[in-house]
Length: 308
Image (cartoon, rainbow, N blue to C red):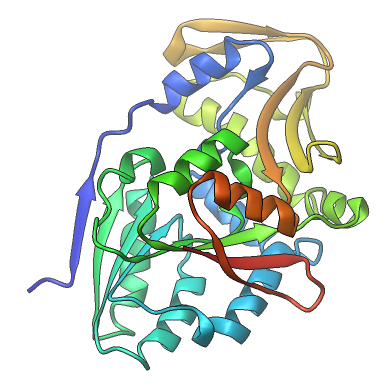
């Protein structure tokens, strides 16, 4: 019996569709999932190693200290597992408790899924991988229906607005759900995490324009755009934008469109919400779940919550 399978689904909105819709509206915005082409993924991996970017280290600290306390399951579903480093850490703990585990990773990128499977399968002889290449909302219809353990780590839930997060959690009722939450903290720490001194986050943000140039025949001059990230305390979120430094017209050949920008115009590329214990509990309740347990790092900067 094969230990690896892959279900592929058509992506509902192509990159071109998303660019046309996002740049054709006001205020302009682009979905953050389009950050992650090969170059964007490489840049994000560098971000996770930056001294200012505490998020990955804090979450890995929580998981390393408490992996044995998280429930194990015969089927583990993971949305957006990235490089698989956190998954590997958890599987090492769980394989002490059970001989076989079916792992169901979900990602929009087929390359990411095959790379993760290729890294994990040789290490865990009792592992089988049933990968799903799909957008998250589509994947909710395809994941196993029997009660399973669902992982949604990396503070990915912070990229959803409240309504999206509630819909996502509501669809996971019946499973045990482990979610990573980046917690509210001082504004200076948050600002530094998204405005690193080396400029890697700026390059990551600007790469979405470079991707338009590469894949859609765009004429964005990256030097004519600036990265801007700031903390909105009222909304408890980091906002990332690209800001036009000058008046300009950008032709995108694949769309047969030219878009005009004035100096100071912005393209909103991402929100990253931050959480308090009360907000986590309210979000879980709205999604039809309860907070069974939470674990945090020593500074309380990051929480991993078990929702049931």
